[in-house]
Amino acid sequence: MNPYAKLTFSLSLMLGTTITISSSHWVSAWAGLEINTLAIIPLISKSHHPRAIEAAIKYFLVQAAASTLLLFSSMINAWHTGQWDITQLNHPTSSLLLTTAIAMKLGLVPFHFWFPEV
Image (cartoon, rainbow, N blue to C red):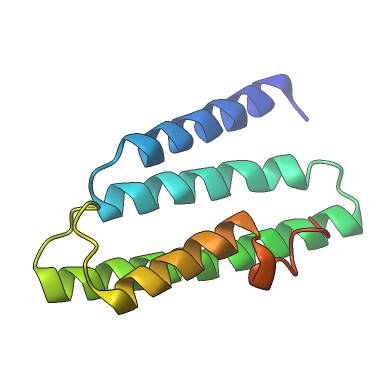
């Protein structure tokens, strides 16, 4: 892999993490998570081996599903509370979906099927 490309993906990974950690709005947190997802996929599949490509596709699909759950959770919360603020997570369905989305993104135990292969 080109060193400039590797540097760009690494800086994008740090930028996405910084955006996610410092956000106070659901959409900016989601944008940071998506930047992380799009920056790590080329780093996973840089060897051009079929197993690496398969791992990158599995990673992308799981992360996309978890991001969809995160956005759905924030929409439910905004619908019930009228605010998109992260600190106002009061609805139980929204809390459950957010916990599920984060567990999928981290590869925690009921959602860990993709983690060993990646």
